[in-house]
Length: 115
Image (cartoon, rainbow, N blue to C red; front, side):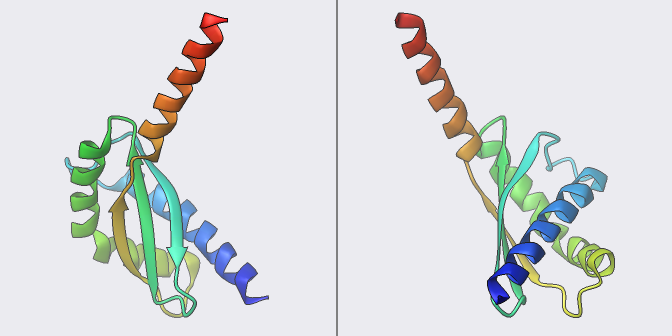
């Protein structure tokens, strides 16, 4: 039963972080960011947020630096928007899954064009 609660909290955090990222004005944060996944610890004290960018892993890494510097603000906003007793400590991680997905899509497209 507790797994459902953590999954629901993870999805809520993901939705709110996407909303908060749109409001941030840091030039390091790209406009084409995606929150791929949110892992929340069992006691809801830590959250790992995986960030991916359409432009590639380098843009995602620079955006993670901007998000890390704004982590206190994001954490405060999460606590107030989700009405959590204790808002989790946030750790942003750059992920290149969108770029890998686009490469895979291009390969599939090439193979289908050959036939």
